[in-house]
Image 1 (tube, rainbow, N blue to C red):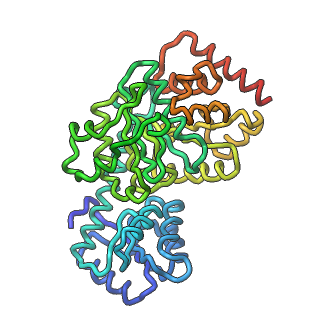
Image 2: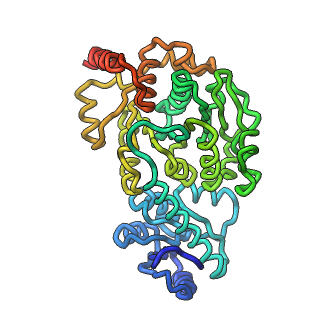
Image 3: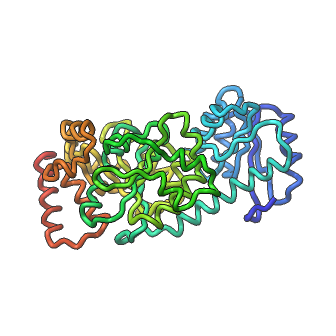
Length: 409
């Protein structure tokens, strides 16, 4: 086993004492691994992980009380530095999908031998090191150079993230006539193709099925579709059950290749912190966190910011986009910023009728209604992203802020 770390600390969570002893015995054969704790149920596992901060947790999926999946979800939020490897006798795809959705890094099926156990541990540790290195090397300030990845993320659905992704991509293309690629990583329920009036005949699943080693520039480009406005797009799977085919490794390979071919890659992610989403966020030069002003959205946004901080994301790389902001009083905006402990970088006005018309027609609203307040606010975001030198920029910005004052005062 080749682990590029002096010592890997590990906690075992299993309701069977016999299984815990067996695992400890197996792990003694590798001097780079140190078992620092045990737990006999999910609640105890969550508490001990928070206290001991192990690098990894071997988590049995079936335990009394809080099971392994619920414990994994709690650890992913409270102790994201501790990776979880789920252990189960079930080898059905559905169980694996549920484990990965809960935040597990790997899934081991019983029975397994020491070689398989060590190989799995090694893979998780190496991926984590790559992830942390990619974060530390990401540019975080100034204007974005060409070949950059911009990810839109929201911890709660229904806040307009996908509509915003399509319109940001469309506006950037209008502004600088660049090669723009949209990637739909809402793998179960992605809508980007429909928002561009495209009937998806090829998706990211076609790319994934060829195998990571076989994905190259030409094969990737052969699976890219182009919308009427010139935007390129890699659509989401056609059916939710195909989502499991697209692994974090596939996402990483796809993004590495696309940033070499396209000027800007706009990624629409799912509302989770599962591996596929983290793979995209890790490689992003900029993350736009989209949220609404309702209590549930703000609660989830606060939790998401906490996870990103724990994962060492540079927080100046994360910009806050509040949708339907005109519905909030100006004093409440300040309270929201105080509660989130982060400045709201962009505020988007709500215009349900305009958005619904855009969705039904399959045309970005920045093209069909460029003079609307909504389109103007999106253009300001794009100007800020691109650092466009426009002598009227400050006038536009102050004019829009005056509009906010009128509508929120």
